[in-house]
Length: 229
Ligand code: 6GU
Image (cartoon, rainbow, N blue to C red; front, side, top):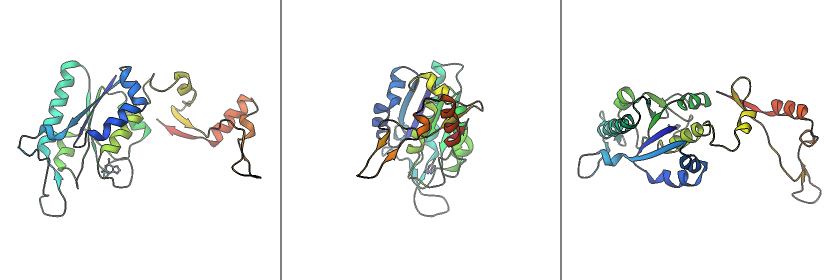
């Protein structure tokens, strides 16, 4: 059981996704737990301000440290009360960090509580990275408007590694290679020949239709990409 705690100023972004994907089944089966926290609930001023002007000047706004500090403290405490031996890891999403990978997902899947901080605006006070976060994660070399999509990506990648979440466990096992990676190969299904218009046929590879398991495996190993753990 992994517990995900998301800290965001846009909690609604997550609702439909977690309600309609395979993740809903995982939640219903008790394999994962996802809690969404509105950062504004951790402010103490009347207007629930979570950002401020950057020191040194410049355009845009910067997310303040205080509400994030309070949120993380409270969320860790809730978990500790329920699960005395569980380990928490605080992840901060920022495009400046090391890129998320299958290997990171695999390591994260062993942790009891993942606290995911989603930044917005032009940045987050660097003291969050320095003193509060255990790990900074980017999902690629491009700039998004916030950490909400990265949080969903990280949750989905980790969740599908948990036994019992996707389809038949033996299917997942079949695609785990000896090197502890995951092989992604091209798939086909009926019809064997698809004709988008007269005189044109898009065929499925013959090797997959012949029933020769060894040949099929060779073909899949040749065409596939191994995503290492
Ligand atoms: Cl984690 N955050 C933002 N804002 N942009 C990104 C990213 C994260 N990863 C890639 N681009």
